[in-house]
Length: 191
Image 1 (cartoon, rainbow, N blue to C red):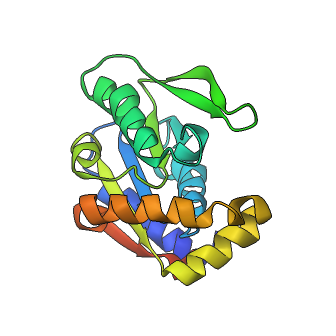
Image 2: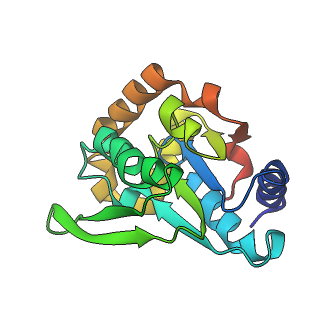
């Protein structure tokens, strides 16, 4: 974790100080912005910053139903994780098997654990109202594309435009950066 990432993680923890346990943190941004790296660093630091509190990481990449599934993934996490958890009911999410192109097993969410949920489409008015903190990672499209293709290779390159169009529609409608409690410059997050 870079010094800038560590500073961002400390800021997130500072914003959570008055939050009753267990908190829910949403991290959104366009593909390649650094949200996955930020979320992983946050989860890794959790035990040090909030001793005795368990934490789970949910990645929307694991539950989007295919390359056209941003909206469905966004709804799924609200309907199956955030709303039930806010109501004190059991929460679970269903994994998407990218190899078979079909839904796979269900994953229960520990009601006693803090939850960090990262992915494009996770932060909007409804989800933010069901979470403790919303983070938006901002980065220009050309840098994001370069990072994403470098990370995921030609397979993602074939789908970039299709996925980016979904992200753009979602952002234009929901304005996630406006409902975020914290906006992070993605350039501060290591590639």
